[in-house]
Length: 291
Image 1 (cartoon, rainbow, N blue to C red):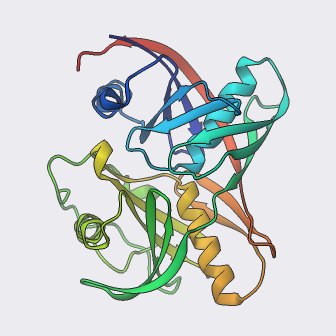
Image 2 (image 1 turned 90 degrees about the horizontal axis):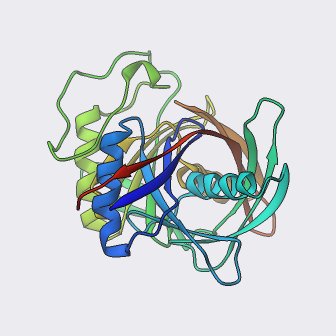
């Protein structure tokens, strides 16, 4: 089948948006084929029309993604020939419509703010191999907050093979922000184990350094067959904001530096979550995909 797509860069979390119709059952294999064609891509979403919303987005694994939502909104506004717009999206993994505000910047990028879904729950869970850690759960994905210390000296990851030969894991050691408390291969193995242990559709491990205002995200999506040390993670940033707000007992506005750049999360007193970042549309193309 012929598949049309557009590649976007939201803070380094390279996203492919498929703009031609693809049946849901075929979306995971189509996504994997496209990621072979665009090896720098970390995720694939599928766009369609939605009644009552401007545009619909379904991720290949059925999860929610804030960066991809921002991309979909930017794509919509660009296609409409507008410079600024409020967009309403129907997004997989979100119970209701998702609102985004998009504005074109002088450098050609788009500045976006997405009203992120509220977490369903935040709880401390005794996780195998790590002990009790905070877990922030959304519809479709849960994030484990694994705090790291700014006092540890910088160093490189051990040169170890991925925990699974079938994973789509990639990560450049030079992009790492902090020395992690465990090795890369240990973290990847825990992502697999904890996803099964918690019984969730997708799992992120957010290595959060509150002293340095930085975060290193690892995300596993079984349905899409992907495990990535992502350059940025919007839902993970939101999870960290929820955790910090709950711990402090007050509203929070924070910017978290990630390998691909910074994302900002604002947790208001009314419990709403606003995630802000930038998006660059890189190119569009089409491919003959056999699935």
